[in-house]
Image (cartoon, rainbow, N blue to C red; front, side):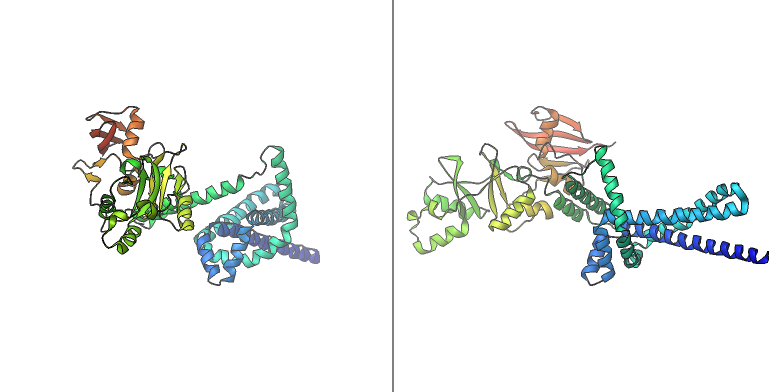
Length: 432
């Protein structure tokens, strides 16, 4: 009898020890899932580049995201179910059929506290150290469970296909969009928590927006483009080019839509030096370089890449009919990212002035993106590029001087107008 009782006690101790080990394994899988998901990808990448082998293993595991998560969930469910089964066996032996209820309550509390909440909390607070610790241990487990994981994934894909949720070629695009959204969220979060300067935040946002912004939104409009008439006397052309604040000027013939070349001030000076003052025999068209035309729908990223590939800084922008819309330079794109770049040849003219009421007086051609950047506003720029264009779009009319409108939380008052163009506006934020 004593021997039987001793054997029973030994068996109970072994079962309790097995349950303890299984709960520890469950805690390991829970912590692994949270740490590998929450750990900073950028920091782990930097650590791997610096030679940290464990960080390299973490990155390898995260690259096989579906297989990793499936293996962790499979392992976690196996140990939890086995621990619950052993606990149920113990409680039924001790208390009979009511032991099932006791086992359910006890195991739920143990799993919840010690195998889920506690390890995941630790993993969230110490995501990088925990990820580096569990990665080498988790790697062989993922390998051993990979046949079962593959079968499970195949079954899941088959079921999803049956209900119309099959994989398609848009998955990569969705992942890319999700990655960009994650970056935007991180920028917003750190700009609030770490006090990132607003200018730096807009720089980062603009880089992410380069695939969404077209040249039509940042180009110099043709109305403001300084051009050279090749029919003018040579000396007048020389005076215009050398007196201009711009180093490159479009050259037109017969009409302003017919751009035949681009004159560079340096090329003009090189051509003038050997002439010893006899400038009338200078052939302006011969020193002009071939113009480069680009569609107005080209994105900033594509145009920046094109500038770098062609080793060019200047392009003329045309619409779908080939009509000249304006011009864009490499400096325009860089200014869109870093803000206004002024040098000693830039015209010192202020486009925006503050008012006592907390608003601004601005020229109509100032872009909405520049105002949002400068004053931390949130005016929409999907339908119009300039502040004057926004007023016309929202009002659905060409307003007269003195008219005022309220939309998007701001009051817009037309101060000046030339023909059908709004040249000056007063914009004041409206209190909620």
